[in-house]
Length: 239
Image 1 (spheres, one colour):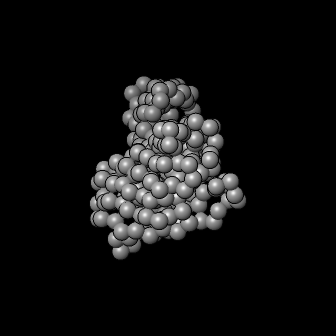
Image 2 (cartoon, one colour):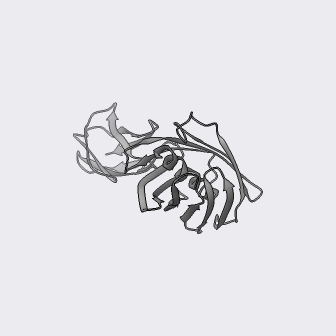
Image 3 (tube, one colour):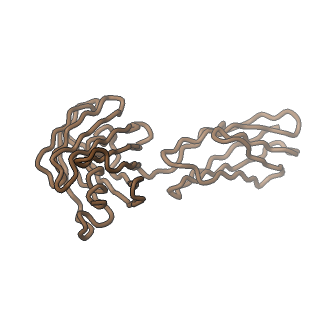
């Protein structure tokens, strides 16, 4: 029963990806009722008003072995919105909608076994290339389990920061704004010149360099996200 719940929620992700052009989404699901969790991978191609590819679920399904990747192919509108109707699958019948802002709702009926319905609601962020969703699964007695799904394209964070900072005196400050579709693991700043560096705040970060005594002091700012991908930017503090 638990493995069936795992499998039902994941295909809903397929109806959200038409809004983006990325080829690979990776993430995880978590059944909050039973505490089970696992990975998922979506391989996506968008071409000629169709979204096609496959999704692969990590772990046993229906109490069996890890299944092979399952293919999909369906039409999409230019703005990514549309109605979803996919009947007769091994998981049941899928019906739902997604709008141009990425808000989606999918209902699964005719589920094999004792489950009666699954409902998935969430948001697909076009710019960040990230999906977040909640799901609820019913049996004959009503709501039976609930959980969450998250998947995103693995890519380096974007660091928005000034290239140069004009300093009066011996202390300079600059603000760094990080854009990433996962959490920020760490942020570091260093210099090969003379200066004491501190980092304060939480995105945007305030970077302060004290004891500046030379004309130009380069400071490297490196941000690493939870996928282990990093971006480095150099800021020149000029007295």
